[in-house]
Image (tube, rainbow, N blue to C red; front, side, top):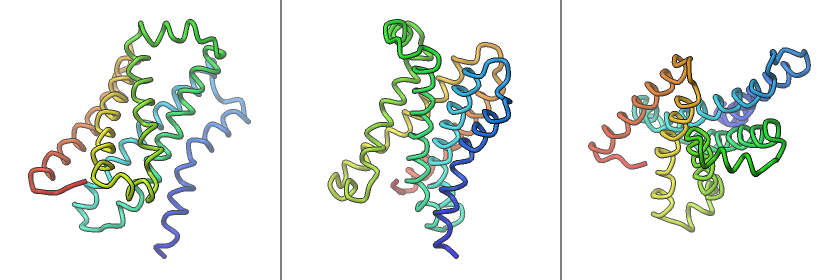
Length: 193
């Protein structure tokens, strides 16, 4: 039965693609389809970052190592959706016109911190394989602690982007704080990544 868990997680992780495909096909993206696509993949990026962070606490709570087996796939999906989010912003919103885009990155703090989070995800995605774990040894754990910085940047990006509606970003912030508090608690009890 356990051999089906990873394929099931993979198929479930494609849910954001299924949703947007359905909405595109049936013309249900609303009055601002570009914003809908960008925001959709941005929110799902955050969801997958938080899911990735939740694997270690779940391992501790349930005393089961099964959760850790899903951390890599969830992390890679976080990078995948972050890349779609970023490419949608660059391609659909700016039509690959880099001059105003660079201007936005330098002048708008929510764009700057979101772009920074995506850049920090790149080395984590590149070094996610077993081969890289063996190659980098202890440095792999140090590098992958960047996920904490990325998660904070991601939530800040969402908060700063949401000028009037703060409910969703607040939920993400509360979940992130809980997950980080779990991590601090486990660190004190001598646990490692």
